[in-house]
Amino acid sequence: MGDSNYVKVYNSRKALAHSLNDTKTAVKQLNKLVTAILIVITVVIWLLLLEVATTKVLLFFSTQLVALAFIIGSTCKNLFESIVFVFVMHPYDVGDRCVVDGVPMLVEEMNLLSTVFLKLDNEKVYYPNSVLAMKPISNYFRSPDMGETVEFSIAFSTPVSKIAHLKERIADYLEQNPQHWSPIHTVVVKQIEDMNKLKMALYSNHTITFQEYRERNIRRTEQSLAIKKMLEDLHIDYTLLPQQVHLTKLDKI
Image 1 (cartoon, rainbow, N blue to C red):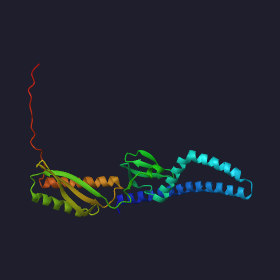
Image 2 (image 1 turned 135 degrees about the vertical axis):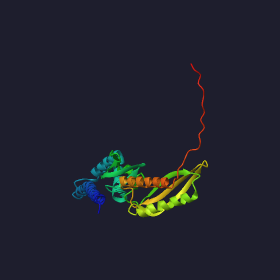
Image 3 (image 1 turned 180 degrees about the vertical axis):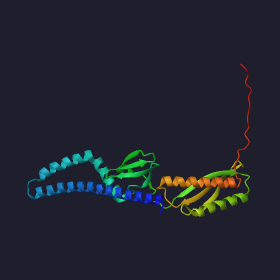
Image 4 (image 1 turned 90 degrees about the vertical axis):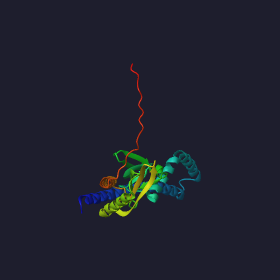
C-alpha cells in the first residue's frame, strides 16, 4: 500500500471520528432539550395531582405560554427544522465534500443548529441547519465514480484516419491506467466551426469521486497532458484563419 493510500485511510478514520463526536454532541443537545420539556410537563402534572395548581392558574400560565410562543415561534420552527435536518435528512457527515449554492466545501463541524463548512481556500462558512434544509446539497462522498470532460480543438482538414488513430491512442492510455480511469469512454465531435475547426471532447470516468478534489485535479492534468502529447505525435494541430489587417496612415503633426 502506497503512502497516498495510508493518507486516505488516515483521513477517512479522522473524519469518521469527528463525525461520531459531532453526532454525540447533537444527541446530547437534543437530550437536554427533551429532558427540560419533560421536567416542565412532569411538574405541571404533579401540581395538578396534588391540587396545588388550580385550572385558573394553569389557564393564566397557558396564556403566557401562548404569548411566549408568538415571540419565539420562529426560533422553535428553526429548531424543529434543524432536528429533522440533522437526524432525519442527514445529507452529509463530517469530512464529506459537498456543493452548496454552487460552492464546493468540506464539512468540518456539524451541530444541532448549525454546520461549519471549509472552502477550498480554507475560509470557514457557518450555515444554520434550518437554512440548509431548504437548499439542494450535492455530496461527492456519497456519489458513485464521477465523470470527467476534456475539450480540445483540431483543424478541420485533419484526416479521418488520424482522428481514428487518436481515438485508439486515447483508449490505450485509459486501459494502461486502470487505477485512475475506467476503460469506458467516448470521444465525440461536438461542433464544426467556420469550416476551419473541429471542437472535440473526451468523456471518461474516474475511479474515484470528487471527494478528493486535489487528486481529481492531478489526474485531470495528467490526462490533458497525455492528450497534448498524442496530438503532437500525430501532428494534429489547429491554426487560425487568415486575419485581415487594416493599416491607416496618420498625418504628421
